[in-house]
Image 1 (cartoon, helix red, strand yellow):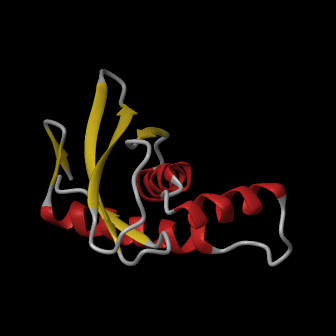
Image 2 (cartoon, rainbow, N blue to C red; image 1 turned 180 degrees about the vertical axis):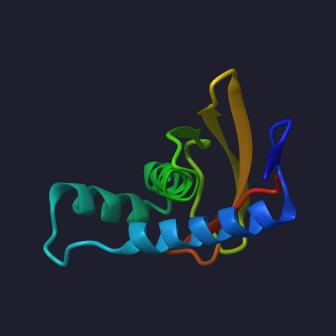
Length: 120
């Protein structure tokens, strides 16, 4: 599935499916407000995307699909705007070296709903 740090077409389909599951899992939550959900709502009210939520969703997708821990970094201060795209960098490690994967994040709407995929 992986050769020289690249994922085959079949691998991309699995990663995309895992990412979609990660976004859905991340979207689930308690109906009881907590300080973290209050903070998230405050960020949404200001129109700034909750980047930590996006990073966590990508990390969880990688763990679910590849059984590998990842560290994901996305740019801060991204505005919530339908159609806006940006990239995040995921870093994983195999037995010999660090691997970097770029994820493109697409905003579905102006309420913070996103999906993401990796071209690799």
